[in-house]
Image 1 (cartoon, rainbow, N blue to C red):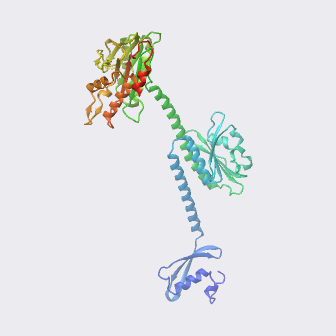
Image 2: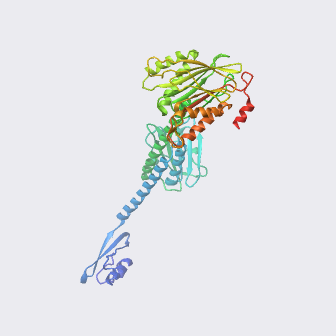
Image 3: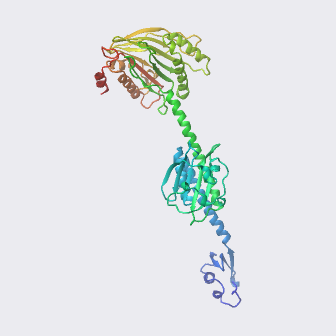
Length: 504
């Protein structure tokens, strides 16, 4: 303030805002609160704070506020960055889908950092999966059959190597497939890796037009922080997808098969795991067709001690062992002995119950050989509705050094069927009190009501009754298999009209 000379009116020597503030203080309008005023003093932004000194007048303290404003501006920018990174993190946490993570990365980067963003995933075969987005525009996905080495810094980023500073990348060398349609001349480029879990999850490419301000060092740092979050999310999503695919493959192998008619005999089965959110459990069943024309089919239904995935794995092992023992399928006792020996020598203390049925069509009837190893007896339902309890008995498998069982012959006339169930049905608790057992008697009465029904209808009906009985309560795994002699006078021909009437 070069004009500030004793005797010169204040309004002619200081900025107007300071002169006006001084007049207010002198008039005692603002003396008590010591209110500061701010504005330009010369070329510098300052705050003026008054101190009333009684008869001495007013002392004005001028404080340069450029540094404070710079700090405030820096804090504002940092808060925006933190908010952006928090938004990105929340978005990445909301999905385990790798394609959605790629799309979200491109969208957020394009709308925060610059004019466009390109996310490049690791090579899939001979192609590069690419997601491209312009600020405020739609996202586009494609697979490019290109060489990443043609773009400076891209091959290194896809390998997880440190990024190349943007100042060292000539925008004119950017490959055309990276530039969105209608984007214009590229003026600045940032290429940074998307670091994953032990390997690169891809690369992020940021583009700005020649008319925009080039990327600075601070923006590149924030871009790397964003890329770190994106890479972790992409890596986790791909790992989840891979594990889910493996799990689905394994679960498909553990699921019971869809049963159908084999050699003129109707087979039907149904399964419900103990927990609705699971697909597999410790109950299992299989039907193995005969290896020779006119031979016996081998039906097996079993129950492994326990629930959930661990029980399902043991059930899967038993099914595989039984499949390996099929050449001796005519000798039920021998198969049970070998299976018992295998379980005793394997790790773990789990055991199983099982019932084996060899079935063959003989003219209009079906001949059965039934062997039960510690399992609930089979139930034979005659065409007139009477229910007979199977006589085969035996010991558990995987408990005692010797497993013994008796084999009983049964015969099914046209319209008869044999039912194999696990104790999940009879021990299901529910009903009016919520704690009453479904029980053997109720199961037999329900099966008697199924007389004349096709095998599939019997399975559906029993499952429906059990489901209504337990309601929302807990229950064990439930498995059921029905072996039926079709109502027909010709070998291997099913009365489809009767089947359709029951289905309707």
